[in-house]
Length: 528
Image: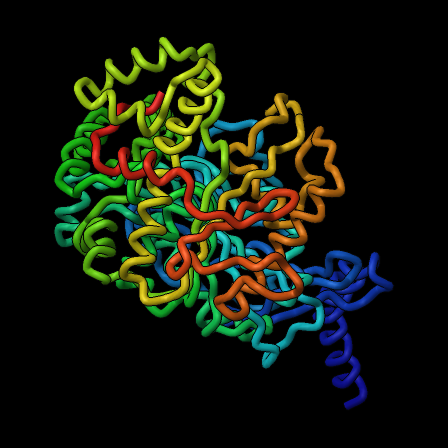
């Protein structure tokens, strides 16, 4: 009997030692505090303490099955259960992509089709029953690049304000948005939008699991930037996403026009089928057997955002302007805005009043006078400003403006509008130091200013970051960004006032409405 008890104790010791070693290793920097463990619907996971033990992070949690093999170009399948305690201290793979922008830096193992992972950041003391607001971040990158492992999104300062932050990966480019004729035939006449379906699957995972981390499953804010903001706007009209979030924040982008198109199913089916044919695949079986790198290399040769969301009649039953005009969007509180200089310094280079007037005549013909009233060129300096305003609008602002206007009319919920005006300090990738360029606000929102390499931040930058974090987390908590002695942010749907996020923060009426109204009513030239 003694021998049997001894064997049992040895067996138990062998099971416990590796787990205990993990606890001690992860918690060494925090006075050997035990590493946090959470029980999800798929199994137990061990995370790590960060920020001197004040917060905990659970990284690389699968929210869906790997979309590989026969699951390539299909709606995400549920994740598998696991036994034992899963190591959740490292990021999962990012989704297949190639290098595009130098400011996209990753801390994950690399690109892969096996990439449907999310990360949860929570206050160290959060536990089941804490019922903290939840903020689910959707990264940008033109539906071409990006991941939850980008340092500007990791260890977010938002958490210190008493919220839980979730970041996630979703399928990109050809793997996330191919909508060929063959796929439509296979899938009941509907194809594409797999990347958006991934985000919905992640939101379902949050609904099922976030209480275990201390979150309130019924108080979820989705927020995103650039393509992530386009995705947020799309989810407001997706039936499958209804009820999975209660608030939205859109930073620089919406499927109402601008840099990222949303085509009809018929248009995309023909074009995407031609792409598939060019690969030499005779059927879907052959296409799904092709190496990912070969498919990605072919997609890389296409111009612009070749694969994006499509009005498929199922996941997206209709285009966003139609849905909003009829009031069929999610009626939830919204923060919508963009940056002052989204695409400045491009068309305006070398611009003069004479050149701008010629541009107006070339692109708008007998409407040139109306164009120049909206974007005047009485001096060379004014022509430069008008060219910057026009390209900012054409790239991002016109779509976001249409979104905030449509939501204000039919949304039946508070709408808050902002413009981020603080020019970023000079650094190697943006050496001028004069623009609040596209994506400028990201490090301010997450409190990760020091991640941006080579930037010399001023006290005013850190103050603005703290204020933005307060606004965003107040909104996540209650649907109203105001409080904590912040400058008052009026409702745009009621007062037609917007806030300018800079130093100091100011509030003004709409000043560029003539620009947007002209662009909303006239066909626009292609982006340069």
